[in-house]
Length: 139
Image 1 (cartoon, rainbow, N blue to C red):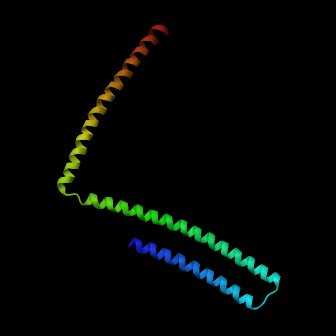
Image 2 (tube, rainbow, N blue to C red; image 1 turned 120 degrees about the vertical axis):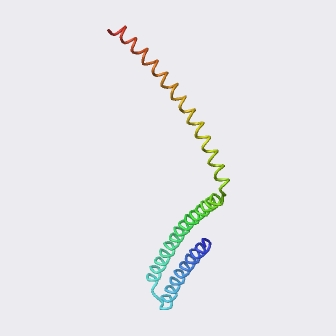
Image 3 (cartoon, helix red, strand yellow; image 1 turned 45 degrees about the vertical axis):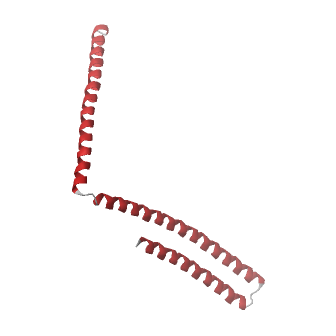
């Protein structure tokens, strides 16, 4: 489905640019047949050149947007594959993952608790020492 979208975007880009070039050439050839003066022809050539350069810059911009959309679609495809692989886990695999994560969380919880106790004890000692020195030397 995504490749169909990309193909349609590319086809639109190519079709639009070829239509624009054909219209510019048709206008140029039509005005050329009427044999305008050299000043008119120079003006027309400049207008056609400006139009073609604008078309080229528009095409470059459209290509960049198309590349961004392609990258976005590819990212969505990768995320969908990951979601499918997660969804395809059976109940035993889900229970095993939950058990591993639960035990890891419990270990980290206990470790964090004792780290907190140690840090709080250090600050308690520092506060007691600071209080002692303040009472002895400042009063």
